[in-house]
Length: 366
Image (cartoon, rainbow, N blue to C red; front, side, top):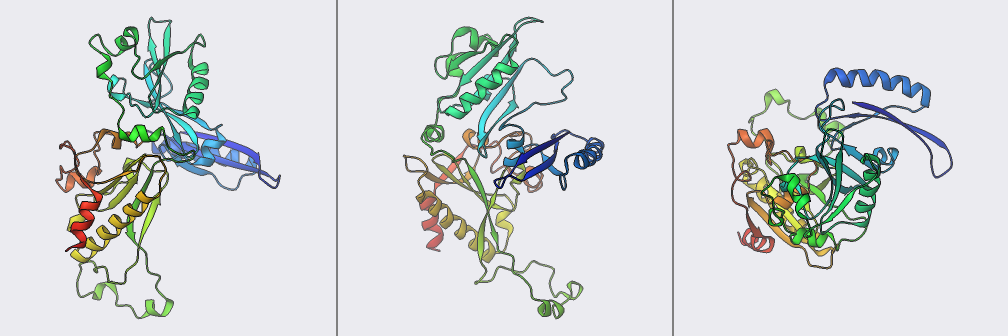
C-alpha cells in the first residue's frame, strides 16, 4: 500500500493538491488502515481535501499523471523481489503502464512491448526490450526510459518480433524457437492502424434506473406484502443503456451480465452463464439492445480495416485475455458466479464465435 501526494496548478493557475492511497491486489486490511492514517497527515500538510483510494488495476488518469505518466507494477513485496521478470507495457487512459506477467515465452504478445530482466550471474543481469509488431511510438519511448532506470549498466538489448536471436530465445528454455512466440492476429494488426487516443473499451448493457417520485414511494406496496418474491420483468417501455466501465478489469465481468468489448478492429458481444436465467422478456430486450449497440459501434471506424463484430459463445480467445490487465487464469471469465453456475461455456472450451449480423438476424426473426 502506498500514499502519494501531487501538487499542481490548474488551468486558472490556482494551486491544487491531491492525495492518493494505492493498494495492491495482495495488500491487507491492516496495511490499508495504516495507509489511511498516514494519508491524514499528508492531507494536513498538502492542503488536499480528501484522499482518493485506488485499487491495483483501476488506476485513473489523474493518478497516472501524478506519477509522471508511466507506472510499473510488480508482483509480491518489494523486499526480496526477483531479478527475473517480464513487464508488459501498454497504453492506458492516455498514459503507459508496465505490469509484471508470467515469465515465459507464452506471455509475449504482438500487441505490446515487453521489458525482460534475466540474471546471467549473481551480480549481472541482462535487460531486453522485446517489441511486438504492433508497438506504438509512445510505448517504445516509455520502455526505453524505464529501461534506463532498471538497467544496472544503462544498456538494454532491443529485440524485434520475428527477429529473435538464439541467445534471447534461450532465456525461456533450451527448446524455445521463434515459432514458440505467437504470431500477430487481426486484432494486433488493427492496433497498429488505430487512431491516436483510441484504446479498448468495455460496456455493460443494463436497464436505466427509473426515478421514483416522493408520493409514489409513499403508496408503494411494502416488500413484506409483496405478492411474489420473483423479480419484476422488464416492461415494453423500459429504457436500456450502455454503461461504460473505465478503467476495466477481469473482475468487472459478472455472470448475469451481457457485455460489449470494443477492441482494435474486433468487437465482442459476450454474456455470462447466468444471463439466460432471466425472464424471457428481460433477456430478449437486453440481448436485442446489445446486438444493435454493437452494430452501431462497428460503424464508427477507428482503424482502416472494417472491424469484425462477433458474438462469443464458447471459449476465450487469447487476444481477448490480453486486452485485460492482470488477467487471472484461475478466476476464469466469470469468476465465482461462473463456477457456481457450473458453466464451462467460456472456460477451457474451444473458442466458438458467431458473426454479429447472423445472430442479429436470427433474433429479429423470432
